[in-house]
Amino acid sequence: MIDSKLFKLYQTLNKKELSHFKKWLHSPVHNEHVDVQKLFLFLEKRTVFKAVTLRKEKVWKYIYGEETYNDNRLRYIMSIALDVLEEFVGYKKVKSDLILSNKNLAAHFWEHKRPKLAQKKLQEAKKALEQEIPTDRYYYQQYELECLEFEIIGTQDRTRTTNIDNILLQSR
Image 1 (cartoon, rainbow, N blue to C red):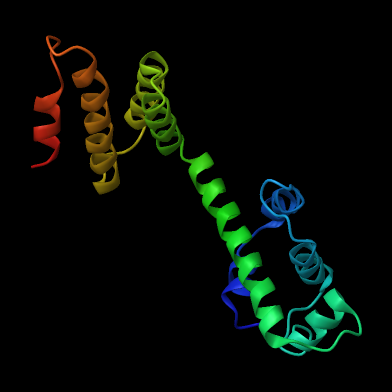
Image 2: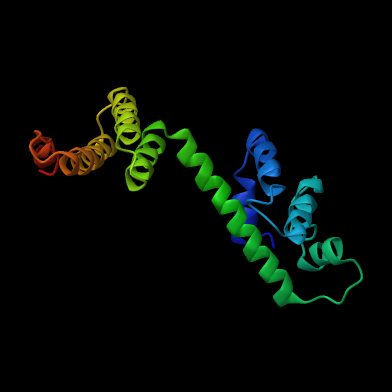
């Protein structure tokens, strides 16, 4: 298990992230599998991570007791656990990126026919972008925001001036 993607990703979490992940893990919205909770509890209780302490048989015994070892079942639980952990890491990354978070909310509001809320979140994303240092990522995000703005403004009122010039400048 020490060479698994699950364990390698688990090791990247700091104490604060582990604390947040524990709450995530016990939320039925994010995880419905008690065995997955037990797997992470097993990892949490380890003071030293070595190949011997993380043998699959030990993990199995911790989760299932004296039940006969089943590698396929353990792999399945590890796969679910990896999915839960990856979703948590992805969520934390998006939540910490104010530009991406606001852009996603703007797109959500737009898709659900709430143009005023979409425009507000779009403006918040642009304001956050202004605080960034111009890099490749900066220009790409600026382009994406301009495209979203064009979609929102351009489809609401065809007589209104759009930002097509800004989009064309960004795509060069």
